[in-house]
Length: 230
Ligand code: NAD
Image 1 (cartoon, rainbow, N blue to C red):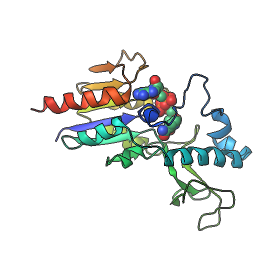
Image 2 (image 1 turned 135 degrees about the vertical axis):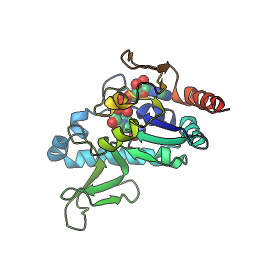
Image 3 (image 1 turned 120 degrees about the vertical axis):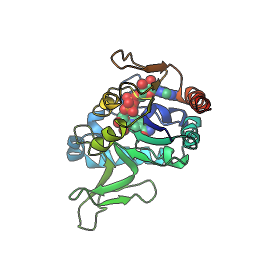
């Protein structure tokens, strides 16, 4: 089976009602990034950070995967599909996709503040101050905040370097190191970028830009790729 690697960003979940990160005002759900998604924010005001992610988690519980998530699931019937996502939602998994690598963590998980290897499922939507790991340390969201290392980037770069086809969906390509993954894809591999507001990327070869929303553009691309097999 041909290997397709897919890099997704917040845009693929936009049609599920989850707002992207760079909405017009530069705020993320009415908050400045520095106030809710950095280690400094956590030290300054952990209650606010927990509440921000509690609200994101609550919203996620009522969201459903959309046509774009399901199209990727269909693609896996015909190709060896590997998804690298910047998203912290679980809509890929809930649409049935396997092989999903979360670069920036997972909203439905939390981890120990003293031992990053202690990772737990959050029960329901709320994580509170006073909830601790088995070593007695406060639990924090299992999210890679701005300014923190991205431990999964090495594995993601390895996967990208083996892509026979590479598809990018709904990412502004502004958040590094994820945005740099395109550089690892072999030059000769066909590449597609689906985003209604796609940036100009002139230095990447074999790149087709599809200026559509994911829910419309991705099912069309998936059918085209499947057809090319016959
Ligand atoms: P971003 O907000 O910087 O960019 C989103 C991109 O999606 C934009 O280029 C926009 O044009 C595009 N877009 C909007 N609607 C679309 C649609 N219907 N179809 C296709 N594309 C669409 O997002 P990013 O590049 O993923 O970086 C944001 C960071 O914030 C990530 O690290 C992520 O962890 C976090 N985040 C995650 C979620 C989520 O898990 N769903 C949501 C918001 C932010």
